[in-house]
Amino acid sequence: MREPIRPLLQPSLTDLPRGPHGLARERVTGSQRQRLLYAMTTVVAEKGYLTTTVADVTARAGVSRKTFYELFADKGECFIAAAETGRELMVKRLEASFARSSTQSLSPVATLRASIQAFLGLIAEEPEFAKAFFLETAAAGGRAQEHQDACRSWFAESMRAWRARIPGHRRVPDEAYMAAADATHEAVCRLLRQGRIGEVPGLKDAVLHICLALLGVAVPAEDAEE
Figure 1 (tube, rainbow, N blue to C red):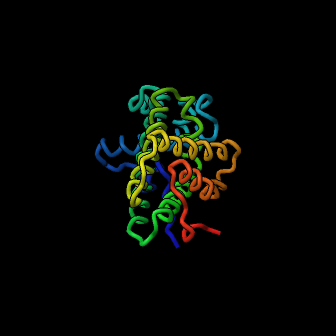
Figure 2 (figure 1 turned 90 degrees about the vertical axis):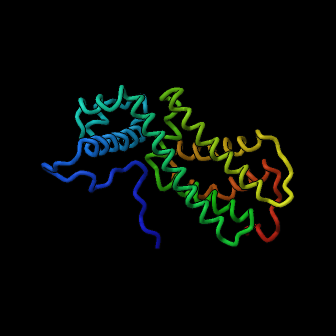
Figure 3 (figure 1 turned 45 degrees about the horizontal axis):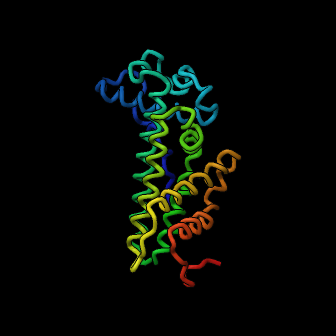
């Protein structure tokens, strides 16, 4: 059985000991920042970005308002930092999963299926980050949206790298890779908006067929699932 994975952005319970600790200021500040990022994610997931306040975030994090403004200029800057950090952690975790799949004796289509399953599974395992990042980023403005766009671009480039490994692959328009990323993004967001995050992994076959169709890849008979 796989060991539980700590949610993205969640601080370690052992980050700071209780009471006087004599730890370096940098470690204390780093712990406070991490708690604020996690608190921002969880509160925005519950209330939405527009109705979330700095007071909500500091109360959830157990950090003073003074400390918040020492670390961030405003609510928006904190949310952007949470989106950026969470995206980087998500990509790092997925790349590790993709690397494991590539070492197995799988066909190209089976490798893609495993990668899509890992991507959708991670979203389902991270309901708070998923809701905040996928549904609330637009409300936070342009700079936050850049991180969501970067996530879709990463997905598109992953599709491009995968397709380049198929023997004799023919070129498709560059827009096809981003179309696959956008279609996957919208399919996920539709379920998130409906409160059906637990069903996200069930999109595996639909997303696989969308990506294969857009990238002009036929499914060999041995790769077809019942």
